Image (tube, rainbow, N blue to C red; front, top):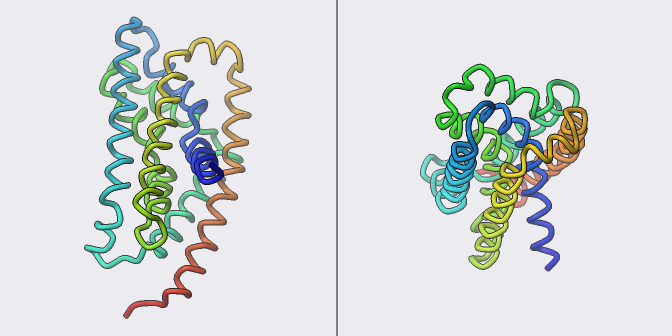
Length: 210
């Protein structure tokens, strides 16, 4: 149970369902409810497919090109840390991605892919988490299956948040969305720092390959 809660918390923090609400509102502004549902469904389906693809084949890809998971973990964690700093000190996740959405609002269904599915839901942090949590050397098949399930559950929450986007936005307002995003950024920074330390520790435990 602790493992399930830990994985759910990590994935929920990184994917940040609440932070995707302002992006979704900007993408679907001025379109009817049926289009909004289609955008939400398409974005969640695409992001789920991308993340599950990395769960299944991400490590095989790294092995094929000769990159150790520890190296990918360190590099990805550094990128994630920079992303977290931007969430805390710069533009929050909603503000930066809403700006992208407003530039091409007319193409609502196309925007289900970018910026909704990628990078709002399936961003670099969630892709890294999908690969690290399903490392074949440290995770059993059962553990990897629970990761995939928790990932689908979190994306399901994202879908529900999108359907309730207007109500959530009215409840937390723009200021609330910005606060949530910055708190998530702080937690994400801590996760990224832990990822760097874990990757370095793992590298020296396994040993560098020539």
